[in-house]
Image 1 (cartoon, helix red, strand yellow):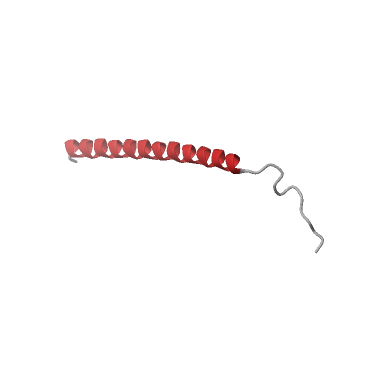
Image 2 (cartoon, rainbow, N blue to C red):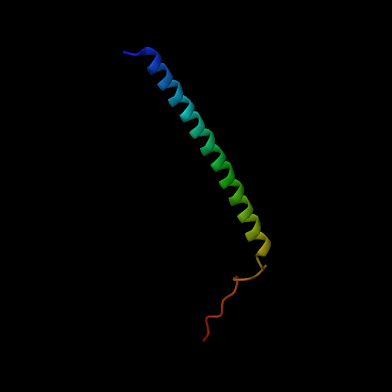
Length: 58
């Protein structure tokens, strides 16, 4: 068994996993911020009373 090669492979694998986790964390933060911004935009354009009453008489 080639111990130095195995050690290098394990270190590269660990680094790759850590980078993947960091990228996914950044993506999650960005998605949460976008969702909050979308909710704020939806609140800003809502019209009070709109949709509370419907006319069912034709």
